[in-house]
Image 1 (cartoon, one colour):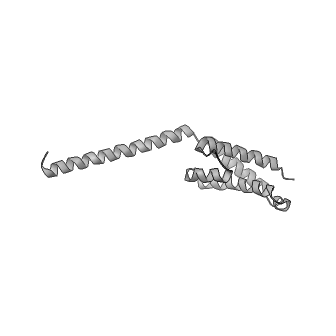
Image 2 (cartoon, helix red, strand yellow):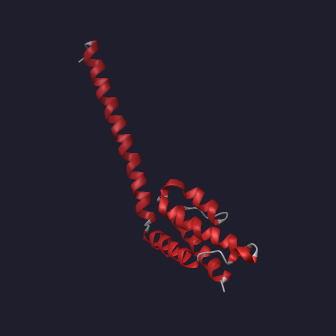
Length: 125
């Protein structure tokens, strides 16, 4: 027989990991995946949603619970959990900050070059 409490435990763990790593700390598992969006690879989103679908199927009519492919759900959970645990939130934040600073420095450099070109063109330099 299918153990719904085991699926609920897996969903709770995935919700916790999404909250810690991506700041998606409110709502159902599907809402958290939607909030994390494209920061998650497509296959991780698919696997997490497969676990969420299994949970909703187990909460529904008992005839639908029999149709849940538990080995596939378990494999999806293990893959998603492994990837989410490997994500380094501090490194992601550092990368985002460095990306913004790099874009800012590039824009300032382009502005300076354009300023020098205009000054040369106008004859001031």
